[in-house]
Length: 285
Ligand code: FAD
Image (cartoon, helix red, strand yellow):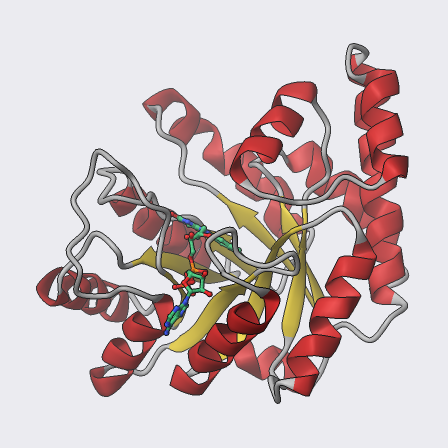
């Protein structure tokens, strides 16, 4: 099923997972999926390594497993910066052959160690190209606190409009910790005539290493209330887990009572986190 169909009827609940790199972890993925799929998400998206990672075949394998073994709709992330047309064609051919209908079209992050092919410079180029001969439902990424490479908020939203005009039907947001930034972003999108579902991505922060990683890879602002939790519980694993979950839940509830069309949970392959969040919103979503 094409993901865009969901929003004609309801709000969505979805998860993001990544394909494990180690074989041992791959063996445990069934245990993770058992829990995630029991929570009845509308779809599960599977990340794709930037820069032609050899793990990318696992993205497709995992998507197949989600679809055929668990009966949940998968979304395959696909990056383009490091591929040429022939390579993208090959991915598209495999996805079609496997019955995968939904693609989160991404540029991908720059990687000094991998050559950029300079064929697809932006995610909109990928969508435009693939749409010529393939019938996927395309999703795109968006950034409530603007993409780090964007010159300004205006150019960021303008480029997003290009992505939507190219054919993105649903947008999934980068994580953020301050809902007001998402609400402002959504308003700006609507002023720019971007009227497709914009799904907020929420990551429950549950350990200190994860927080440090977040700071280094995305420019999400830490509101004072969130910063206080980190300062207070950084060295107390269990307390940080509880406080991080409560923070994410209050963020999600605030989003759900506002006019949003779904929640995308960055699970970090942690079924305990996903279960606890879902228990907290069972009667709400
Ligand atoms: P683009 O949409 O191409 O935008 C990148 C920059 O170029 C922005 O500054 C934008 O304003 C500008 N731009 C866009 N279009 C144009 C245009 N037509 N002309 C001029 N400028 C333009 N990375 C991975 O490697 N694997 C993953 O699985 C993955 N999953 C992700 C999932 C989500 C929900 C999100 C939010 C991000 C994900 N990323 C992933 C990270 C993503 O690849 C990076 O953020 C990357 O730097 C930008 O990708 P994009 O598709 O948003 O790029």
